[in-house]
Length: 406
Image 1 (cartoon, rainbow, N blue to C red):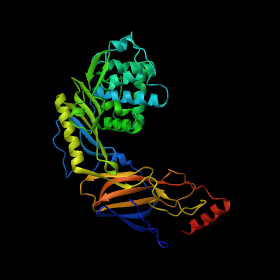
Image 2 (spheres, rainbow, N blue to C red; image 1 turned 30 degrees about the horizontal axis):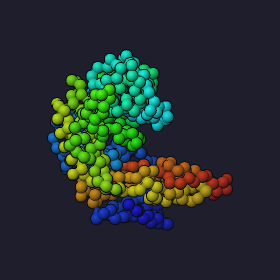
Image 3 (cartoon, helix red, strand yellow; image 1 turned 180 degrees about the vertical axis):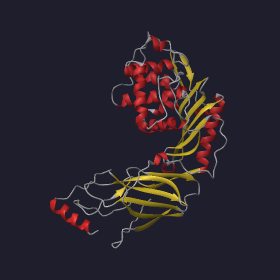
Image 4 (cartoon, one colour; image 1 turned 120 degrees about the horizontal axis):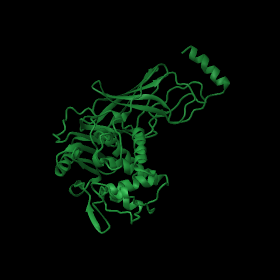
């Protein structure tokens, strides 16, 4: 969306508008002394007028990766045993080690007796073998091998306990506030828990930060040691748009699935993530995840409101080497709403006044609030799009005098 801003010379309030498809969005630039920044990704879409279909799960979340908005949820912040969805974080740490050149796909790792004796699902490695990192990744991701998870954890951190500390540190960095890990596998432990919302945050980070590595999640089978095992994510066979992610099951956790699908092409492409926890069977987690994906794609639409780096305002700046500073966003801004619900959207840009140099590229300078029928839809940080150093002594002194009479 291209926004034209007209700044009045006699007032600090400027009105500007732009066409958004067939509907008009009016934006008003207001002056304020303070502002509060709320993360756009933390605000769910107001979708009460389109209720989600009944989902037979203890908890679930439907998440749009483009806008960072939750489209539907139930008990999304309640803590549950994550089972093998834990391995999403194990993969995240492993992908990060590959990215940092601390591991290589062709590198071999030893198999400890602890890994060999792992309970539950396995890729069937033993201490006589030295599998490669890539084999272990595929064994963990496709076959859900607990033995592979432990071997990777020990290869990266020296022990599974130390690896769990890395997992928890990364969870904190990602903002997973209701998650704690004690192992790399997801085997039951009363001190290990997560939420549907936190797992969606993790899945989104995994897809965003490691696009070259997440292709393993769409593999339907993997053979190791002459044993072929299928991927337990049945959606890979049922929906061609699904390309991940991970299943999980224990007696306490029930049947769980974190799934993702991408539909559409070019600017119309959308990716959704679903997390369902505590269903009663493999078939149920597949069916309920498919229902959520279809609901999200069928009843919601995403529109790009602003492009990264596109100026939306050029307010007056004091004590700088120039008299104005361009403001905008440090990323593309997308909004997801029920289809045909974009009309009547109002955006209000609030900046901290007076704006005093220096300002650096990416520095927060204000907030854009999106409302509809006086209801807050989203609140998005606005940043400086350029560096503006402080002026010299004379320039700063002159502007100090100007501010006295402002």
